[in-house]
Length: 190
Image 1 (spheres, rainbow, N blue to C red):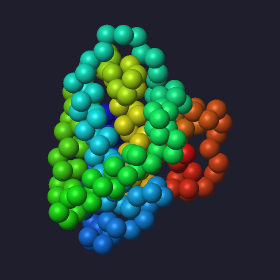
Image 2 (cartoon, helix red, strand yellow):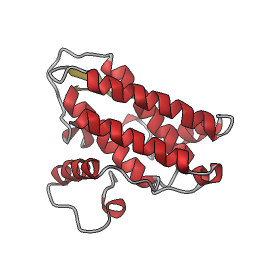
Image 3 (cartoon, one colour):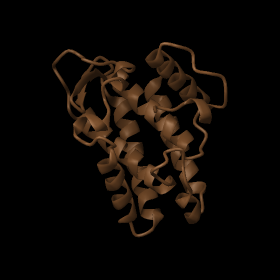
Image 4 (tube, rainbow, N blue to C red):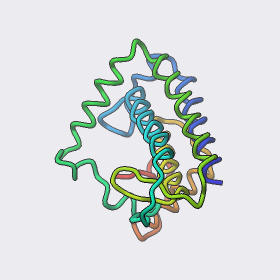
């Protein structure tokens, strides 16, 4: 079910950015460092990482799951105290496109390929990414959580089941129910 939900969420992200006028892609997001176009590029990087990860089977035991994956991973632990290097890279790379249409096209084909790979991946398999080993279902869950949160960041509407999945993961991460409020206000990684 989670691979299909990832596909639905990626398609919702695609529909959202395709519906925006070019200047709509320049509006701010909840991810304060990025506008919608730059956030889309960040998501494109995640879809590309998914393709690499699905092609990188691991033989070791998983060291994180869909929840604990979010605890130890922080870009700042790799020598960048404010995460600024990644922010600057995303801004520069997103700005390098000759207009937003090329970026939207690349996102569309890459996200569809990543969703296809997620559906075809062996659910009993293990994969390696970002220095961790995860089961395939746990890895797909991490992709879904990130896509759901960033679609909300961009002002889009994820599928209700993706929101429920993300809420459950974040509640397990924090060890407490999330406060009431709109999904856009409550579902955040930071």
